[in-house]
Amino acid sequence: MVTAATLDYAVIDDPEYNEPEDFQEVSSFNHGYIQARLGILFDRLTDYTPVNEVSLDVSRVDLSQFDLRTREEIKPDVCLYPKRGLSSPKDILRMTEMPLLAVEILSPKQGLYEIVEKFRLYFALGVRSCWLVEPMLRNVTVYRASDEWQTFTADTVIDDVLNLNIPLAEIFA
Image 1: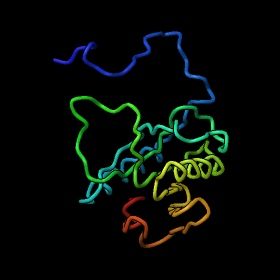
Image 2 (image 1 turned 45 degrees about the horizontal axis):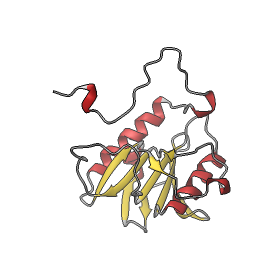
Image 3 (image 1 turned 45 degrees about the vertical axis):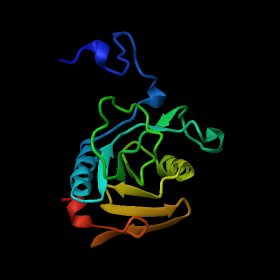
Image 4 (image 1 turned 90 degrees about the vertical axis):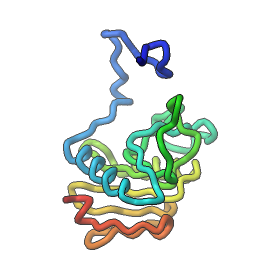
């Protein structure tokens, strides 16, 4: 039996608490759909484990060099880690091990500048590859560095850094 005493997380039990508007992320149906599709597609890969919206510890980087509103953590929409299982018996609240891949899915109220700044931070943290998925345009841009990318609009998304080939049609099915 799991009790509140055995759980390792904080619960805000204040009905008056509202997260500051600046820190609220806006999602959408398409965003969630693509996030789920990527999780399914990545789960088929034998060498990797996909994780959605895991908190990455950013404390080892000077955040003043990035134009972002984060202080302690950042959450990519989807991450790929080397193959692993559940963290047991304790969960990990903020990952210090960086993923191999960080994926951001452009939301209707999100700007491209913000995503590129996130990618700069991800690369500074040691993430090896970043993907920008644009549901409205049905394309994926693969970044191998913050200033080096390739956009895929048909056929297959190719990530040479991680040796991944994902059919674009399966992402936007």
